[in-house]
Length: 86
Image (cartoon, rainbow, N blue to C red; front, side):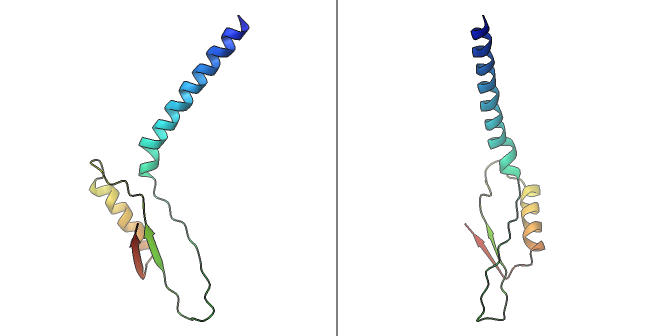
Protein backbone atom coordinates (compact mmCIF):
# COMPACT_ATOMS: atom_id res chain seq x y z
CA UNK A 1 0.00 0.00 0.00
CA UNK A 2 2.83 2.39 0.84
CA UNK A 3 4.60 1.65 -2.45
CA UNK A 4 1.41 2.47 -4.39
CA UNK A 5 1.24 5.87 -2.67
CA UNK A 6 4.88 6.60 -3.51
CA UNK A 7 4.45 5.54 -7.15
CA UNK A 8 1.24 7.56 -7.46
CA UNK A 9 2.95 10.62 -5.92
CA UNK A 10 5.89 10.29 -8.31
CA UNK A 11 3.58 10.02 -11.32
CA UNK A 12 1.68 13.13 -10.21
CA UNK A 13 4.98 14.97 -9.66
CA UNK A 14 6.24 14.00 -13.12
CA UNK A 15 2.98 15.08 -14.76
CA UNK A 16 3.04 18.43 -12.95
CA UNK A 17 6.68 18.96 -13.94
CA UNK A 18 5.98 18.24 -17.60
CA UNK A 19 2.97 20.59 -17.60
CA UNK A 20 5.05 23.28 -15.90
CA UNK A 21 7.88 22.95 -18.41
CA UNK A 22 5.50 23.21 -21.38
CA UNK A 23 3.70 26.18 -19.81
CA UNK A 24 6.98 27.99 -19.26
CA UNK A 25 8.27 27.17 -22.75
CA UNK A 26 5.17 28.41 -24.59
CA UNK A 27 3.57 31.02 -22.32
CA UNK A 28 6.39 32.63 -20.31
CA UNK A 29 9.75 32.44 -22.07
CA UNK A 30 8.67 33.82 -25.48
CA UNK A 31 7.41 37.00 -23.76
CA UNK A 32 10.51 37.64 -21.65
CA UNK A 33 12.68 40.56 -22.63
CA UNK A 34 16.17 40.30 -21.17
CA UNK A 35 19.06 42.76 -21.44
CA UNK A 36 22.57 41.43 -20.86
CA UNK A 37 25.48 43.84 -20.84
CA UNK A 38 29.06 42.91 -21.65
CA UNK A 39 32.02 45.24 -21.85
CA UNK A 40 35.03 44.57 -24.03
CA UNK A 41 38.08 46.65 -23.24
CA UNK A 42 40.22 47.93 -26.07
CA UNK A 43 43.21 49.92 -24.87
CA UNK A 44 44.13 51.04 -28.40
CA UNK A 45 40.94 53.01 -28.93
CA UNK A 46 39.50 55.87 -26.91
CA UNK A 47 36.18 55.59 -28.70
CA UNK A 48 33.39 53.49 -27.21
CA UNK A 49 30.91 51.69 -29.41
CA UNK A 50 27.63 50.31 -28.18
CA UNK A 51 26.27 47.32 -30.07
CA UNK A 52 22.84 45.84 -29.43
CA UNK A 53 22.28 42.27 -30.59
CA UNK A 54 18.67 41.11 -30.92
CA UNK A 55 17.81 37.43 -31.05
CA UNK A 56 15.05 34.95 -30.23
CA UNK A 57 12.21 37.33 -31.02
CA UNK A 58 9.86 34.38 -31.60
CA UNK A 59 8.06 36.14 -34.43
CA UNK A 60 4.91 34.22 -35.26
CA UNK A 61 1.16 34.81 -35.51
CA UNK A 62 0.74 36.08 -31.95
CA UNK A 63 3.70 38.51 -32.19
CA UNK A 64 1.69 41.73 -32.03
CA UNK A 65 2.55 45.43 -32.23
CA UNK A 66 2.72 45.78 -28.42
CA UNK A 67 5.47 43.16 -28.16
CA UNK A 68 7.37 44.74 -31.02
CA UNK A 69 7.02 48.16 -29.36
CA UNK A 70 8.56 46.78 -26.14
CA UNK A 71 11.53 45.45 -28.10
CA UNK A 72 11.97 48.78 -29.90
CA UNK A 73 11.74 50.77 -26.65
CA UNK A 74 14.29 48.57 -24.87
CA UNK A 75 16.61 48.80 -27.86
CA UNK A 76 16.31 52.58 -28.04
CA UNK A 77 16.93 52.87 -24.28
CA UNK A 78 20.36 51.35 -24.88
CA UNK A 79 21.23 54.15 -27.34
CA UNK A 80 23.20 51.81 -29.63
CA UNK A 81 25.67 52.70 -32.37
CA UNK A 82 24.90 49.42 -34.16
CA UNK A 83 22.04 46.93 -34.04
CA UNK A 84 22.64 43.32 -35.02
CA UNK A 85 19.81 40.86 -35.62
CA UNK A 86 20.62 37.20 -35.22
